[in-house]
Image (cartoon, rainbow, N blue to C red; front, top):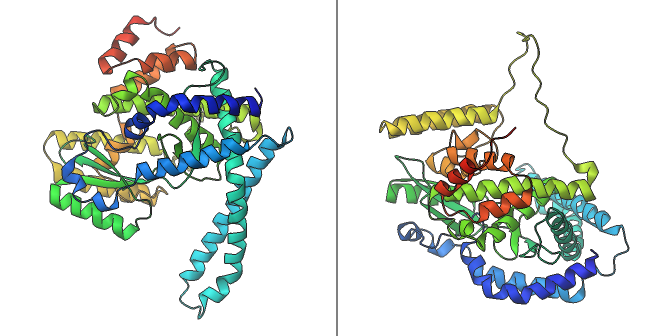
Length: 427
C-alpha cells in the first residue's frame, strides 16, 4: 500500500473515530486516570494533573495539518527510512548537547557558564529546529510502517488497522501510583504534569503517604493510549516501534470488553498490559524486520557452561532478583509485617542499585504498577498467575490476530481460564 493511499484511508477513518474519541480520552491506554479516581488522592494532585483535553485538541489539530499537506506525499521512494534514521541521529546529537549543557551548568568552577554554553545552545537550537520540521514526516512514516505490519498480521479492516495507527511524539505525563501498605494492589493512577521537578515528586509522595497511610510512587511513562497516542522521544527505534504498537493495542482493546473493563480489577489490568506488551514487541519486531533489518535485536540465547567456573562470578539476573523480592514482600505482608516488608524493600533497592539498576524507590506501589507488565515470567510480577495465563494463550494460538481478538472479548480472568481449558495442550 502506498503512503498516499494509506493517508487517504486514514483521513476517511478520522470521521468515524470522532464519535469514540471521548472514550479513548477517558479509558484507553496504560496510564490514563481511572473512571472513578480516588478523590482522597486528588486533593493532593488537582493543581498539578495533566490536561488531557487540551493536549488531545492540540494533537488533533497537528495531525489534521499533517494529513492536509500530505507529510510524505512528495518523498522519493526509498527515502522514508533514511529520514527516520536522520531524525534519530539528530535527536541523539541534541541529547548529547543537552547533557553537555547540564554539566556546564553544574560546574561551580566556571565564572560565566552561560558564555561557555552559548555555542552549545546555538547548535542545540539549530538541531531542534530541524527536528521540529522533520517530526511530522517521521510520525507519518512510522505510522504507516507499523500499520502495515499490523495489517499484514491479519488485523485490518479494508486493508487498514482499525483504529488507525496515529501517534504524536511528546512528553507524556508522569503517573502517581497508589497502593495500600498491607497488600500490593493499584488503587489509583493519577496523571501528572511532566514538568514536575524531582523535589516536587518527592514532596508529593511524602504528603500522600503521610496523609493517607498508603504507598505512593511517581513513575515516568513512555507512552499513553490517548488518541492520537503519546510517545516519548527516544533514539532507540526498537523501543519506539514497540511502544507505538503497544499503545495501538490499547486503542484496539478500548473498543472491546477487555479494554473497557481495564480498571475493573487488578487481574484485568494485568491482562490488558500483558497483551499490549506481547503484541507491541511482536508488531515492533515485524516493523524492524521489514524496514530496518540491521536494527533487529539478536535472538536471546541462553547458554550454560557444562562445568561451572568457580573463578567467574555469577551473572546478575535482575528479573530473578526482582521476583524473589516480590515473593518475600508478599509473604511478609500476608503476616501483617508491613514495616518489615518496607525495610526489606529498601535493603533490596540498595542491593539492586549497587548492581547497576537505578531504582529510586522500591515499595508496594512499585510492584503494583510494574507487576502488571507480565509479558515475561518473573520480575516485578512475581508468580502472578494472570500474566502466566496470558503468555500460555499466546503460545497456544496460531497467530497474533487470533490472540488479539480472543483476548479482546474476555470480560474477566475466569473467561481467560475457561478459554485456556477449552484449547488443546501445546504439542
